[in-house]
Amino acid sequence: MQHNYQDLIALFEQVFFQQYNTKLVRGDDEPLYAPADANCAHHQIIFAHGYYESALHEIAHWCYAGAQRRLLEDFGYWYIPDGRNEKQQQKFEQVEVIPQAIEWAFNVAVQKQFNTSADNLNGYLGDTNGFKVKVHQQVLAFIETGFPPRAQQFIDALIHFYQSSSPLTAEQFSVDVQRHNKANKSFDLTEKEYLHEVF
Image (cartoon, rainbow, N blue to C red; front, side):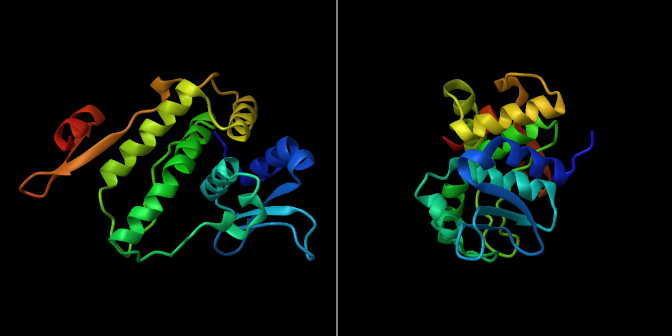
């Protein structure tokens, strides 16, 4: 299966540009959401370095952001780069659960492996298993009650383009968590086993 960012750019424009005046744009630096201004008449979702995964992640944020947030640079999100301390990382993860759940659905729709991202390699990582479980629970909730409308629109477009199975089902989403024994060797736990240990 070929995954080309150019296809995402074309699909996004086809689905959203006329109604939302927004384009997906390949960037050469860090990702950024740039609302329309005097220099550009349309809003831009700028993803990093032509990375397909970055494009899906930034689209997920856009699909969740409300109308007022879409008028603000980077949707008005608080952001501190890699190297966050414990409190900063916890706040980061709180705002990432829903976008990463949407991103996971996008990845299933394009038949691509998905991994959650704590995005803090040089700082406090915290309970990465707990974050995975929260994202998994959120995507299952979306499967049950419905994705945000724009997210569902893009999921449908991706499924059609990549000829994936439809609709998405809970069985397409699973999560493995790891713990370490006294020898510091990691081994897998199911989500149910993890929740039992934690709670």
